[in-house]
Each structure stands twice: as C-alpha cells, then as structure tokens.
Image (cartoon, rainbow, N blue to C red; front, side, top):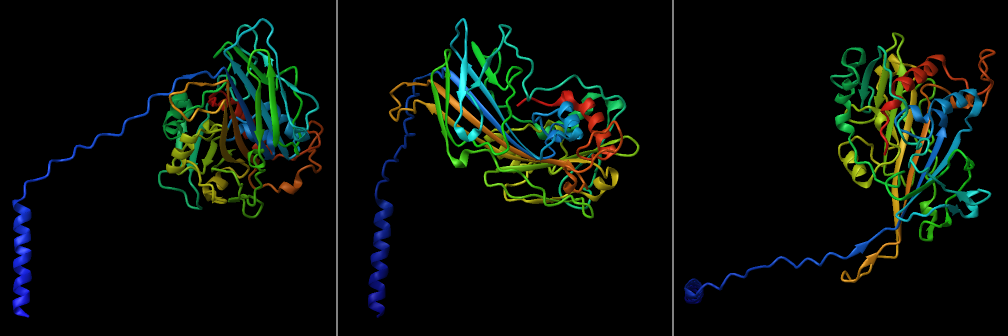
Length: 426
C-alpha cells in the first residue's frame, strides 16, 4: 500500500513539474463583436397619436387633483350642477405630417364599437400653427394671493417625520414650489403638435365635440385617410381597449382615510392625491408618493422610462397595490378634501412598414402610431358616493345634482384659480 502511495505521489509531482516547465501559451486577444451597421432610415412621413382616458367617480373634478385630464373649472361647475354621469371616456386624436398641401383634410373612421355616427374630422390648424388650446396644456398664469401649502406624502396613518412641508407662497413666491418639483421631473413624450411639422390636425375641436359614450370600445380596425398623409390602418385587440374604470373601495364615512381601489388588468402603476382647504385657509395637499411632490404636476400619461423610474423611486405605487391609507393628520386638517387616484397604462406603438430584418436594407417609414392609456377616479374624501344623482339642491342658486360640501367646493375654486397655470404639458 505504501509503495502504491509513493508511486502516485511521484507521478503527481512529475506532472506538476512538467506543467510548470512548459512554455506559456500565447494570450488570446478577444475582440469585441462587430456592431451591425446602422440601418438607413427615412421618415416617418406621418405620426399619429390616440390618447385615451377612462374617468370614473366625479369626472369633472379630475382636472383639479393630480393631473391634466380634460376638465377644468368649467367641468367642475358642470359637475356641481348635476353634469357628471359617473363614467367618462375620452379620445384625443392627433395627426402630424411632413406633407403640405393647399387644402388639407383628414378623417378617422372608427370601428362600430366606438359608437360614433360618422368619420371623425381631424381639423387642421390655421396657418399660424396654433389651435385654441390643447386639452393637456396649462391654463392661465396663476395668482396665488396669500396661499400657504401644507404638503404630506406617503401611505400610513402616522405622519412622516418632517411633515407637513410648509410652503408659504406669500413669502416664497412661486419659486417655493421648486422644493417639491425635484422628485417629479419627467421626460415629456414628444408627439404631434401644432407647428412641429408641416401639417397638423386633431379631434375633438370647436367644430366637432361628439362625445364618446361610456360603453365605447376601441377594439377593431381604425383607418385614417387624408390628403396630406399616407393611409393609416391600426387594429386594436381587446387587450388594447380603454382601461377599466377605477372604483374606490374606501373613503366612505366612518373611515375616510382607508383608501382602496380595484386592481386594473393593464395598470403599470398608481398615484393617489388629495387637495383640500383647512379652516384657516391653508391648502392641504397629500400624495401617495414616498417623497413629497406637487400632485398637480403629475401628467395624465407617463413614458415607459418615467414609469420605470417612478416605480423605482416609489413616486408611484406598484401595479399590484390596491390600498393606501391616508395619514390621519390630512383628514383632520381638511376633512372635505378632493381625492383622485390615477392608473397609468403605458402605451402601445405601431409602425408601417415593419423594420426589415436585414439591417443593410433601408427602412422607409410611412407612419408611426402611438396609443396612450390612463384611468382615474375622483371623489370627495369622506363622502358617500351613493348620494350621486340625489336631491342635491341646497338653495335656489344650487341646481339639483351632486351635493358637494361647501368647503371642498371652495377649495376647488381657490386652488384651481391659483394653481391652474402650473400644469405641465406631457
């Protein structure tokens, strides 16, 4: 046994010595894989955007809390007069082309499921390249007066350390909001807009305000025909329809801070916010963001990059989230706050013709299409939504409709007048 062990030891030692004495193999130089040549690309000749929203609850209030929406003071007053129907779908169509002719015209023919009676005319901008106003543009320049903002953030009954953040507009001016905006910077998606190319058309507009019904569907083939753009054909599947309606499962009297909502299949993130008025006139603002932000700056739509970043930074709640308790201090400071929950659905993109697989072949793009999705719900915190459509008249000047608490209505008017010009276009 000892003799066998010695032989193995001698063999191993000899092998190791031979290995050490052998000349080193030349080092292999690894070259980076060759990058394919850049594919020659032209176009697109036309860019087409379909921006969709689903609003539920009290749609008229949506413009005032956390996002542009399609509302404003006019919609809020209409809702207060009984104009809200609980569900509102909107569709904004925009066509931009590098072609220019003397009398441009274009129409969007939708599938029957959309429920519109005729092709939707895309109105061309006047020669100045400026229509009246896009639905997501800022309003008038704000006049803050002597407003003081108390800003809360984050989910949970307890107030986070250092809150509320106090911004005294009378002392700091509009620059005081800069302390909030650092956490809510975003990269606006650049789509069709007046003056950006040779021809621009959109719908709806002053000449055609046909309303999209609550049961409207985008599913089917959409055709866009115009004399200043290539023919555009887009087919949307059931998974690419309007987002579902958000329904609140909290904020009822007895537990107004226990905020909850239904899960939406295509939601990629959620954002909740409130805005109300304290008895001393302070404006009380809260958002579900982990860091204090100014909810009014949150746009209706977010790009994929911003969605990823806001989820990582916890500015947005993850798509599996269905509840977020509002801090008790917010309810105590402003019991009749307006509340909004936003769901961001991202977007889908199409292009024609498809990109050639052979990168040496040029890609001459006729058109690109983007469909954007958003859903939101708005209410008055602590209010029983079963009152919708009831006997809301409080006096001769208040028409029958939804009863809005006086303080919440005053907060809506004062804050929208003061903050309406700060909404950032996306």
